Length: 320
Length: 301
Picture 1 (cartoon, chains in turn brown, green):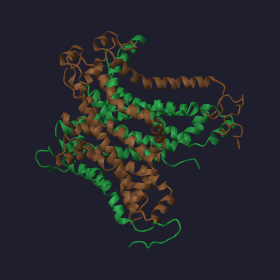
Picture 2 (cartoon, rainbow over the protein chains, first blue to last red):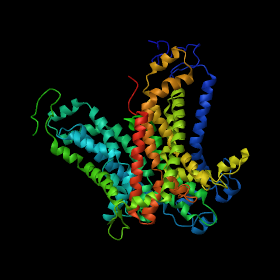
Picture 3 (cartoon, each protein chain N blue to C red):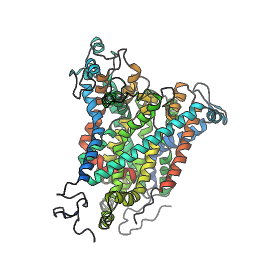
Picture 4 (spheres, rainbow over the protein chains, first blue to last red):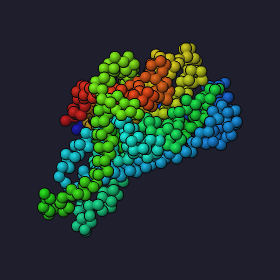
């Protein structure tokens, strides 16, 4: 029992003054030691590195292109302007856009945004639902061969997604779905092994008592799934949904393969094309940063709402 | 066949659910077969063919592999990819470990962890574009700062020597917070009593870290490394957006070469052979990593 004096369960205990750096982090009052100051300094430095690019996006997006060339180091927006955002949303006329350093090309940002929303939403909804069904079968239903089939699903974890892209493109092509949103969504619609394992882990731990009571009352196993297992696993289902949504929203390589025209272009692909359509005068940095910011915004908002859930889920989701 | 409905307490619903189960795994099974196993088989098969999508695929045996062995661009791509992985993983692991340990010692606030994770929320494309701007040769704040400090400007994305290290660092920026949270979770699993014991014995911070934290973290660190190395090998987005493989072939990583072969030159057979090479590299690397780190075997008992 070495921790009697520093047990975290008693946070109000006055720390022993003779142990300067020796306390669990829960302590209320503690001596400020040089080591701790240094540690915070490093942490703050790392945070600055982490967050500066976000600020720089915002600062650039709110500047006007002409002024950026003259004041490339000003920490505040130079010659404040909404021009970048206006170009992104097509609120400027072509002449106006070119005059402000834009490419003048009509970028149908709303369309890309809509495509991204459709793809990420449908993929998330279907993938999580179908994965939950499979997870239910692997955790709560009794059937012969369950473990063998589950083992086969386990094997799919070994297949690197990147290896499947090329053959999957060929399949999508044979199905006539190239350059359609359905083609982009298709490979992700059914499941990911990760989602199945993640949800199975939680379904196995749902208490059997409620389920048994329902079964005695004559409920079917299907009803148990919808009325008991899903409602009791809202937390993990939300977590996996958010992670899937973020992943799907940020995906680039696969949509790049499948989409060729605006009909199926998602935001990441549209942004990635930027380098190819740089105007003569040099890149439209203000417009581009405005566009990246708008593209990242939905994820940032999602994160603001669910930060605690996402942050806490990352530990075990990666390891278990 | 069906197990008799034994009415043991706690096993009320015990009966055979085979039909329902098959129904429930049907959609996932379609996905598994159509988009995991079938592409695996097909990709390997295609690597033995010559195919431009227009005419039917023609079996050519090991021809693609022979061509690959003699293809300097392929070997360059392997070299560039390995260089990228080494820089990316080396830097990322060290930085993430520092962040994780600092978080554990300083604060467990959700706010701090959220801020650390923030870059992970943006896509690789967004991260690439932001750094393209920050590190722009003429106007980028990064190069302006270099000039202030009295150094020469660096063509981060435009010089052969800097392209790969720069791309590696951009991806470190995006993933270090995520990796840090994984390691942080591993740190939580180390019982506080071990630290207490070390402290009672008078061990210093540094000694505690190298003597206790790091060895006990090894299994988790091993898993984290395997996950991130596999991810790192698949680098494409950042390269495609910033340098597109250039200057010359200085940043033509394997994935980009595969993409060029398939979608630029419609040489799907050769691209598939390249993919198989990539797959083999991943298998070998993962195997050795697993052996070396003894990932998953804990010392905590």
